[in-house]
Length: 502
Ligand code: UN1
Image (cartoon, rainbow, N blue to C red; front, side, top):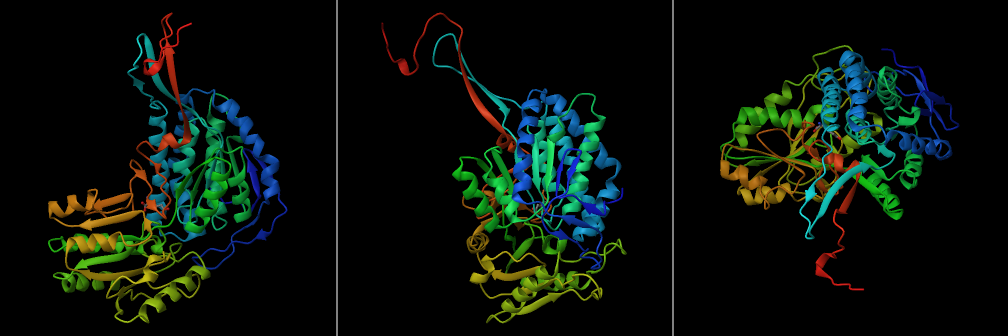
């Protein structure tokens, strides 16, 4: 699968529209080479086409849900068949290492399978009515066009979490991908349109709209009354802007924003397991997952033994260009701005009293591209700057003495997405997952903070935004609930026993 050299600003199904916004020449973070261009859309471009999504909704909502699932089944097959090609686009555009790029495409395939099953399970409830000869029930109906705003770090999977569910739930999608990953977006859209072609029933052309551009386009999407749900993944600031704009018009927002994950390593933890879990969580995707490990909280009794292993782990990391070497552990960070942010954060912590460098990767850095050294820095306590999410492979390591103190440190930050305890003590594990334990949406035992499976609901509390995407019953956010009270008698009893005699 070739990537297009030049992308249109706006794509509505099979129609491409050139737009008036800036022309951007994206270059790969792996080697700084330009690989294409795209013209960004303006808010007016979106305004001019957004109603096509609503027209598509009027048609799509009438297609039976299992048929809508058939479209997603076919799309899943396109990803299966071209798994390598999709992975290569991710590697080129955002610099993931091969294993993680393949893993991301697998995540797309997995959520397709999940959504296909779901298309036959959009269950409602029947509820016991308090009145004789009455039935009370609940149904789930399609909602309307779903706006999807995504970040660069999961340029395919996060779209798929949203688009597959939205589509089986009877809704077309309008996607504003990260301006750092428009080619991944186009490839996904094309996979969907390929599936549309293979369907033996009619699918409206505007089932999927992609609008390439900047925050002004996202803002236009957020304020449009055509779009009852906006699902947004990205920074806390972006989420705040989206939430306010959507709330103002009584829309619904589903937010998956910043993370600041912690891992607690207890006295009786298996240290080999702990080091593997910590290392992958901290340096996977070059520390740019919202589930990436930022804070390691290690019991004082095993601190030295654990740090010795962690140092060896960092020393064995191979950093390099994923396009030329399949075996690298760490690829580039997304761009120079991210590189500078990482270096600033790193200098800040090293200049803080009580901090010292603990571990650093030893590998050479390629001369071209945006590469940084993954580092782990010891801190004597929680500092205010650790409240900020640094999107890069910078890990803070601290000691604790009681489990209560460790949980308090875990919960100390304004974000609440992912957290882990590494322990073989069942009481500590259960405490961590209990109401007085981790305050995060994801709380794991003997599993890293990143790499969640699609079957569970994904998201978190506090500044993470409160939304849940992907598995479990996250689909309910993409539908409207309707309660039906049905009287099959000729009497007219009122609820609550109210008498109204004529
Ligand atoms: C994200 O970083 O926005 O749990 C999503 C994980 C991946 C998804 C991360 N399955 O790390």
